[in-house]
Every structure is written in C-alpha cells, then in structure tokens.
Amino acid sequence: MEIQGKIKVIGETQAFGANGFRKREVVITTEEQYPQHIMVEFVQDKTDLLDSYQVGQQVKININLRGREWVNPQGETKYFNSIQGWRIESLQKDSTSTDMPPIPPADAFEPAGDLNEEDHDDLPF
Image (cartoon, rainbow, N blue to C red; front, side, top):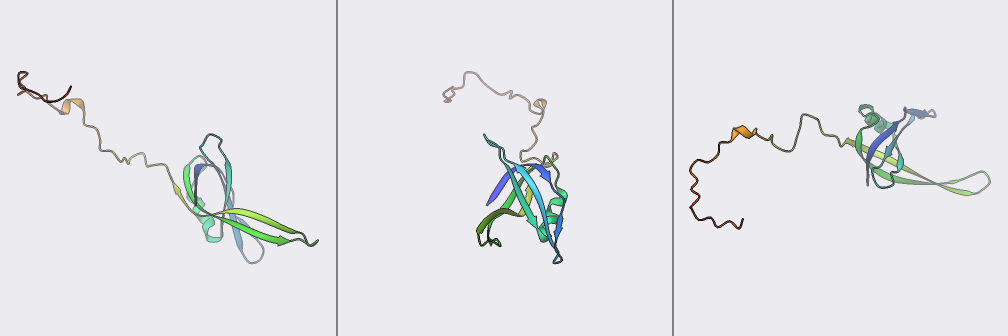
C-alpha cells in the first residue's frame, strides 16, 4: 500500500528501552476534497530514511498496516493499529529536469517558400 501527500510534521527519533528500539513519526496531509492528516511511523533502521526530507515536500510513502492485541492487567483485551512506513520517495521533480524536450524559439523555423496556392489540397480544413 502507499500514501501520497505533503509532509506536515517530521518528528525526532525516539529510543525506547534497553533493547534499542527506535521510532520516528511523520505526518502526511493528503491532497483530496477532504484532506487527511495521517501519522506514519518508521522504526529501527528505517528512521534514517526521513533525514533527507523536509516539511512541505510532496512524497509517496509505502506502508504496511499493523495490528496488535494486548490484554491489560484487568483481563480486558485491547486492539491497536499502526501505519508503518518502509520506503519514502519525493514526488517533486528537480527543477532542472524535464520530461519534455525544450521548445525551440519561433524564429528557429523559416516559412516554406515553395507553396503554390493553386495546388489541390485534400485536407478537410
């Protein structure tokens, strides 16, 4: 699955416990009729992927939906969901690159001089 939008917030990397678990959160604002603010978490070595991104950038994030079951001390079962990112890429193109070839200036072409208006033309316009 993937999500696209503009980066609204990039959090700091957080470390938990003695086992070295790391987590970093990013909030993406989708661009649709009713924009959504979606928090995506990156864990462990994936937290470093966010280092080269900034607030305001258009990105696409590949995600996995995660669900967990937890039983509290009173014996009640609770369920938790998270959205976990595993790849991120910028949707903004480099300002120097383009998919289209440059348009030549108007004076780069010379008008045809060998046209004869009396020649029959089968074009419908």
